[in-house]
Each structure stands twice: as C-alpha cells, then as structure tokens.
Amino acid sequence: MFSETRQNAKPENVTYYFRTMPLQGPESGITWKDYQISTPTFQLTSIEKPDFSPFLVHMTGRNELISILKGDNAPNGVIIKEESGYLKSVIPTFDGNHKYYNSPVVCFTESPLFAIDFFRYRSFRRWQLDQQFGIGFAKHNLIKENDVRPVVYLDSETNSALLRLCNKIESGDLKITDKEHKTVDFSQSLAKIKPLLFPLLEDKSSQGFMWEREWRYSSPEGMIFPHSAIKVICCPRNERQEIEEILKDYLQNIQIVESWKEYDDVVEFLKRRRPEILDLDGIQKIGDLAILQKLKINNEQTFNTLEAYYSVFKETVTQLEGRSITDTLNDIAKTSRILNERITKLELEEEKRIELEKVKNTGNKVLQKGG
View 1: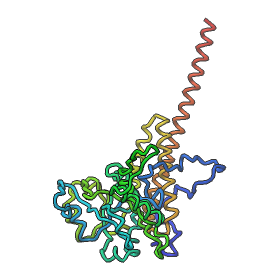
View 2: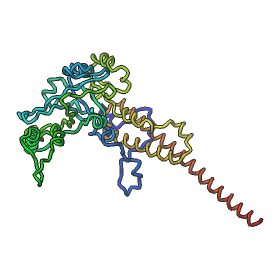
View 3: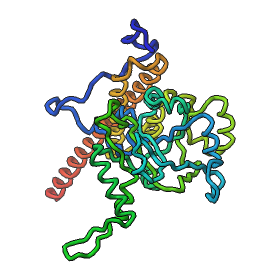
View 4: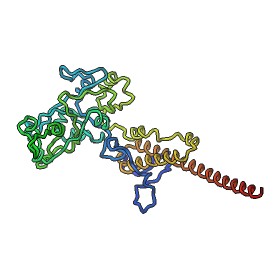
C-alpha cells in the first residue's frame, strides 16, 4: 500500500506524458470516441468497470481442486476424457426451503477476482470449507458452450409461488389450457427457469445472498470441461506443482495465483488489447490514413480506460504496481503522440499531392488553349 506521505507522490524515474482527464461533458469539445468502452458485456474486465469480471469462478477448498482437475470426483458412469475435469452438481438449500428445490446445479460467481475472498468473511460454511481456492472460466464461453445463466432473484413470496407452479407442472398435477381448452405445454420453458430461481430473502436479517452474484449450470450429470477452457486458478502453493503437471501444455493460457488478489487485471487487460498496442517503428511504415486513424482511436481508448482505472485505485495499489501502470500509460501516450505525428505527416503529404495535381491540371489546360 502507498504510505500516507507517498499517496500522491510520483514514482521515481517516470516521465509523465499523460494528463489526468476524466470523461467530460459534450460541451467540452472532446472526442467521445476516444473514451468509448466498446468491450462486449460478457468480456468486461475490472479495469473497464470495477464491479465486473470476464470470468465465472467455481469456488472450492484446497483438497478438492486436484480432484476437480483430474475428474476423480465424477460419479460412477460419468466418463471423463483425458485433459478434462469435472464439476459436481448439487441441489441448493436454504432456511428449510429445500423441499421446493430438486434441480442439481453447478454454481459459479461473477464477482471480480479481487473481491472473491469476501465470501469467507461472510459465510461461516465457506470459511469452514476453506473456500479460498477455485477455478475460473471465460464468462462468454460458459454462456455460449454450456448455457450457464445468472440466478434470478425474486422476492421470497413470488419465488416460492413460482417454484410450486414449476413443480406442479413438472409432476403433471397442473395443466394449463388455452381458450379452446387445449393443453399448452410450458414444461420445457419452466424447466430452464426453475434451476435459476432463488429468493431475495428480503425479510431476513442478513438480507439474502445477492452478494454471491451467482450463475448456474443446470444438469444432474454435472459439468465436464476441457482443460483448455480454464483461464485462472487459485491454489495453495504446495499444490501448484501437481496442478502444473496435470495441465501441462495448457499452462501458457492459464494464470495460476495463490490468492485472488494476486491476479493482475492490468496485465490481462493489456494482453487482450495487445493487437492494438503498437510497435513504434511499425507505425512509420503504415501509409493508410484510415488504418492510422483507427489505431489512434483504439490506442486512446486503451489509455483513457487504464488511466480512469488508476485514478480510482491509485491509493490502494502497491508502489511497484503504480510504477508499472504509470510506465504503461507513458508508453501508450507516447504511441498516441507518434501516431498523431504520422497522421499529420501523411495529411500534409496528401495536401501537397492535391495541390501539385491542381497545378498540373491547370498547366495542361493552358497548353491545350495555346495549342
């Protein structure tokens, strides 16, 4: 952490090309496109929106992680292929209302990684199970490939009524008919909704579990996943070697940390935008103004997003992290300056070309008249 005397101090040996400039109103004359965050919703990171994460994380204890990765926890009859793991489905229970639930699900949280350890402080059960470890997947992949969906929180009375409705239709005790007295089958739709239901518990002193920001995969068989789908793992130091032996060739695309707070959001954000972070020498070889303008916008968006993040969190990052961020901002700002210089040069060259073309055309017309 920054000490009180260092909170506003600049790291040594850093040249500040950038300026602190939050997004101003439309009357300021700025270009909104330079600040636009256009990342698809399911891929938003904590850099772009601090309460968001591009991951869905399944939390577990230190002893269960190896079993999950190996698939040793799969029940008899479930076949786990090589280089695959397994997450077991369980039926959610709460405050004696378990009789309404009979949908086995795999649970995930979309909480930002730096905030996940809150769970152990909030829930005695999670602390008792030592759930400071876990495995994270790309949110957009689980949505697309596994139909993982967010929990639907309803007030407790509505939630109970809807669950009873689902159960009656599922059991055949209730049938819905239209005006012509023909049975309308809603069973498939309700079968998709029911596993996602959870009460708000607004009348309880603890005010429920919305803090979990839970998503669910609904299947009694559990979820089989390829090791290639893993994006981040939090594990104890003494298990890291065994985990690395299990994951082998997939390690290059997985970040392994010993605590969720170790995950480097800035590095991963820049990795994702790597195609947009340019080689300075390469800029001088680009002769297409449209390409340069697009690169400039992307570079400005990267800069402004990262700067906005740092302006909020600069007092809570370490001095080393702060120096890394400011160095990165300086590099990106320098790239913008070089892009601007290259664009200006090409624009001037284009203006000269047009002028010469005009002069040439004027001279040809004079010669034609003289002839």
